[in-house]
Each structure stands twice: as structure tokens, then as C-alpha cells.
Length: 269
Ligand SMILES: C[S@@+](CC[C@H](N)C(=O)[O-])C[C@H]1O[C@@H](n2cnc3c(N)ncnc32)[C@H](O)[C@@H]1O
Image (cartoon, rainbow, N blue to C red; front, side, top):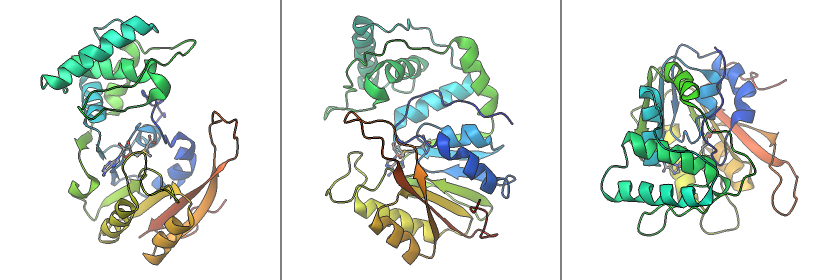
């Protein structure tokens, strides 16, 4: 089945990893595909599993996908215009405040704010209000109703949940791909609130599951050790890195680690 482009901009998107994961997925394609940190949906839209359980802690992301699945047809104006952006941001926050964060209007606004706001960030203040500033892109290609319709068929048969990964009910016949927020070594907290304790909690949770699984993360020394100590086969590869504001083009080293998978050589070129 044809790969579809992710509809949102999302930090840490793994579209670049799809060709390699496709090789692995081809061994398990009749299973249910489970992604506990689904983010921008890049991998399932690349692999196109028939059945999937897709989860993320971010409820707005999951509301948006559920509307996409039912056939989202945004009824709001979409223009790359700062005044319109701030008006839509205010309306989105009013919907959250009044308990309508799961409405079709909130889903359409979430899409617009994601495409138009600064770097596709999704950030909230202490009061729970979305507070990302206007993005200043030169041009934005917003999707039209027809483009949204293409996702409807792709998302049929997929279940979307929001919450912490530990709440997922995993079965022996599943296949899991986990892509948590990156481990950031040498700082005591991570920007996305995923701490070193969370990284350890994730690996302990994974090792109790009976199905084939693959994990990706930034290849820091402590992450490589953690996965090795828990019986994973661990490899590293170069990830493309976006040019940062400092002009740094250094490719980042990414880890892929797997368990309950044979043949063991699926990864080698
Ligand atoms: C690196 S991104 C995943 C990117 C995704 N694989 C893609 O290709 O777009 C990590 C995601 O984990 C989510 N997340 C953070 N903490 C979580 C938790 N405790 N349980 C589930 N999801 C969580 C974040 O909201 C974020 O979307």
C-alpha cells in the first residue's frame, strides 16, 4: 500500500526510518501494529498496517486523528496571516476551556495552528492554554477537504488512544514500535517532560511484554547500556538532522534496539 505523508509537523518524526522499518514489518505484517508514542503518525502512514493501536500522551493530537478517521472537513478560514492565527488560537483555547477540545472545530483549529505556528510546536502554559507564537513561514500549503479525505481509508481499522504508554493492553500477537522523546544526557530534565526515570520505566515495561518489539532513541551511552542490559539487540545508525539555528549539520547518532525478533540479521544491509 502506498505511503501517505504525515498531515502535521511533529518534532522527532521518523519518516526517514520507514524504509528500514518496512523490512522488519514485512516479517510481521499480519500482526496488530502498536505505537505507544505515535506523535506525527509518520511510521504507520508509511507502513500502512491493516490493524493498529496508536497512542500518545497529547490528547489534542489524538482528537485530531479521530476526526481525520471520521472524515475531517475544516469549516474554518486558513491563511498564513498573523491576525487570523491569533484569533484562531484564542478560539482553540476557549474550546479547551469550555470542555470542547474533542470537537471537529477544535480538530480543524489544531491542524491550522500546527501548520501556521512557530516550527509546528505544541506547547501549553501553566493554565493549559496553547501559547505557540505565529510561525512566519513564506508559504504554507494547507490541505483541502479532498486531501483530508485520502486519510479516511488509511485510518480505518486503527484505534487511537491518549494517555501514558503503560495503560496499553498489549497481546502476544502484537508488534510494537516505540519512539519515546529523546534521551537528553547531561541535563536533569527533558524538554518534553520525559525524564531518565521515564526512559527506565519504559524499558522495564517493554521487557515484560511477550511480542516482537523495536525501539528507537538518541544513541547516548546510557541509553545503549540500558537497552543492552535488558537483553535487546542494539545497533546504531546515522539520522538526518535538520539544520539548527547555529547552522549545525552534524548527523545525529540514532539507536535501534529490538527483542523477540528473529532472524537477527534483518537490520544488516
Ligand atoms: C519522538 S515523538 C514520536 C514521533 C513519532 N514516532 C513520529 O514519527 O512522528 C514522542 C511522542 O511521545 C509522546 N509522549 C511523551 N510522553 C509520553 C508518555 N508518557 N506516554 C505516551 N506518549 C508520550 C509525545 O507527546 C510525543 O508525541
